[in-house]
Image (cartoon, rainbow over all chains, first blue to last red; front, side, top):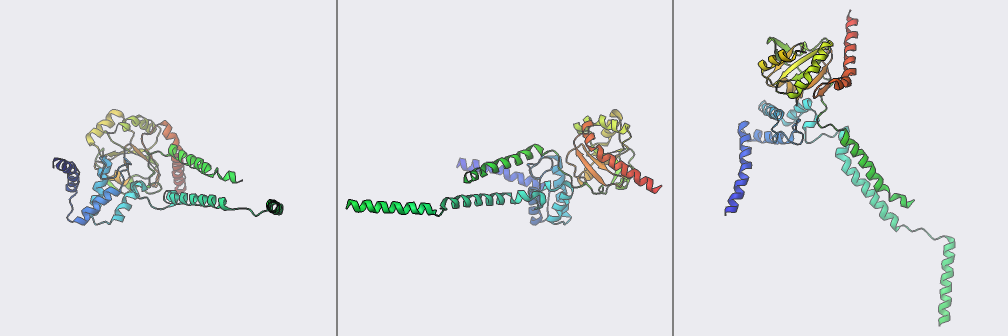
Length: 157
Length: 184
């Protein structure tokens, strides 16, 4: 019982954290609140590139959170908000980069690698099975060997 | 011949290692490419630090300039300040954006360390900084005579950094000069 309580308590810190964030950015409806938390998780802090806006304590992340909040209140949709930040900070602020020329390998590299591997595997297994037809010389030798064996078998009898 | 095919994975591995290895050395995580290059300086209405006179983006036209984002809380800004003084002494036009700073501290700083700026734009809330995609002071924008951003440097300016940007700046100056001659 104690252990269960302890586990519950350890999770309670996570919950209270989310509540604090919610209070700082009050919304009058659940939809916008959800949108805000999703956006803050999908957008990347430009200063500390391995954290998203909701995780980062950097001042610039706080500024961007404020801006996202402001834009949601102004009635902008998610796409407009992301575009707004990309226009100022570049594609770097997105954790989900768009498909374009310079991200081609990022998106299709793994598929390409898989295809190359498949081609190699197929070519290796194919080449193992392949047998070349016997030449005329070999055929003659085979016939001679067969004849010799028949002869020896007949002798044995 | 067939034997040679066995080397394909090794060759692929070496090619990948070379490609990715080169990328590791080259990527500078501190410097993000700015999407603002080639775009006009964003619109703003803010006050001048010196006399609270109103400024807008149209004040950033005419002679090509450096627009330097700085603050008294930023140690690297202090490190580059002396070099900015040197540039200003050479006649290079520098405009400051006092970013999320205390105005009194800023004035004191300019009195004590010298003032390389033609004027300073006061941006206490960091609004203009956000428009410019500023994520860490100091940052310097190279703005041409038409108010178009031509380059951006994140971090302190120094002799070495300046040499890298000098061709861009010289080109901006040459363009502005030939324009002035045409008008005459």
